[in-house]
Amino acid sequence: MDFSYLCDDSLFPGEHIAGCLGSGNIQTNLDLLLSALGNTAFLSFSALIIAIIVGIFVGIFRTATNSLLLRIIGTVWVEFFRNTPLLVQLFLWYFVVPKMFPILLTILPAYLLVILGLGFFTSARIAEQVRSGIEAIPSGQKQAALALGFTMSQTYRYVLIPRTLRTIMPPLISESMGIIKNSAAAFAVGVPELLRNARQATDTTSLPIENYLVATVLYVFLALIVFLVMAVVERRLRIPGLKQSGEA
Image 1 (cartoon, rainbow, N blue to C red):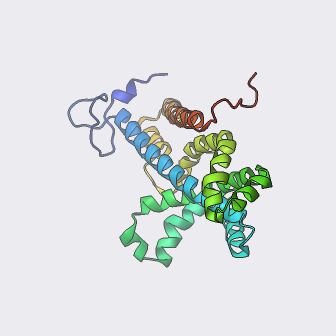
Image 2: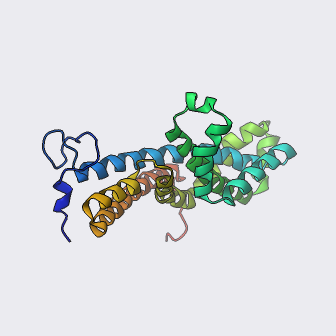
C-alpha cells in the first residue's frame, strides 16, 4: 500500500489546511479527509448533546406516573425513533420536512436538520436507558423526597436524575461512541462527512484500500476521544468511596 497519494492535490475545490501536506493553497487528499473529520466531529458531538438532553426528558416522561399524557408522548417518541431505520429518518429530515415546512430552511440550514435527525434517533435509545435507570432506583427514595416536601420536579432534579446518570454511564458511553459510527449515514444525503469524502478521494485516486483504511483510523480516533471524555465524566460523577461492580 502506498499512502503518498495523501500529498497529491485533490481534484475537489477547497481550502488548504495549515500544517497538512501540499503546497500553497492547493487542497490535498489529506486536507480533504481532515476537513471531513472536522465535519464528522461537529455532526457527532452536536447530535450527542441533543440526544442526551432530549433523551433525559423523554425518559422522565416515560416514568411520569402522575401524567398519562406525558407517558404517551414518551412512548410514541421512543417507539417511532427506535423502530424506524436511521437512514429513513435522515431522508425524512433532509428531503421531506423542508418540503412540508419551507420556513424551516430560512431558520435552520439543511446540515442542522441532519444533526437533529441523528440526535433524535439516539435520544430514543438514551431515553430507554434513563427510564430503566429511574425504575431501578428503590421507590422509597422517591417517596422519601416527596415526604420531605420536595415537588415532583425537584424529586427528579435532585434525587432521581443524579442517581440515574451514575447508573447509566456505561451504556451511555457506548451510545456516545456509537453515534460516531451512525454519523456515516449522513453520507446518503450528501453531507461532506468522513465517509463521503473518503469515497470522493477513492473516485479520484482509485485507491479504495488506502482511503477507507485512513477513514477507519480517523473514525477510531474520534471514538477514542469520545470514550476518554465520557470516562472522565463517569469518574467525576462517581460517588466517593462507592465501589463499582467488578472492583475488589
